[in-house]
Amino acid sequence: MSAKTRIWVFHMKELIYTAVFVVLGIFFLLLLIFMFSPDQTAQTSEESPSPYTAGIYTTSLMLGGNPVEIAITVDQDYISSIRFRQLSESVAAMYPLMEPALDALSAQICETQSLENLSYSEDSQYTSLMLVSAIKTALAKAEKAAP
Image (tube, rainbow, N blue to C red; front, side, top):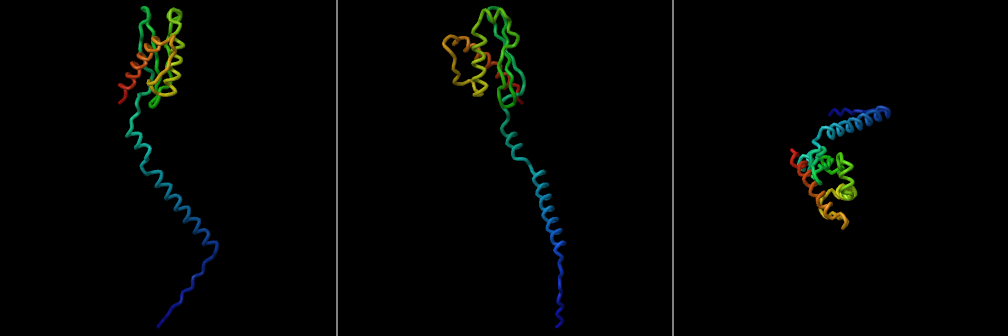
């Protein structure tokens, strides 16, 4: 019987180099897998479409024969701002509660992102209801424009 004994000699330096290259190879392989695997967040965003199309939407009111335009700025997921667009001085003088009522409503709507459960003062109850109606009209335009 011929038993051939094999003796393997390893140098420590070669073992360290081999271990480093194996670890780097595994790291790069995992990096490639994570880079080119399908993204889970992209799939969830496709499944839940954004409620609005980003843009500025306007609606007009007639107050005493003068047009008043309300502009609502929306991003894809939230309402950014609500403001008057080109409010004339005569309308502001004739209806002094318009600006404070819109500022209060705008702050509440932008904070809660909802038109539900809005609070307004007794002094501007009807003004606020009229403004909320105009805001609903403009938001409906933003929702209809959504793909």
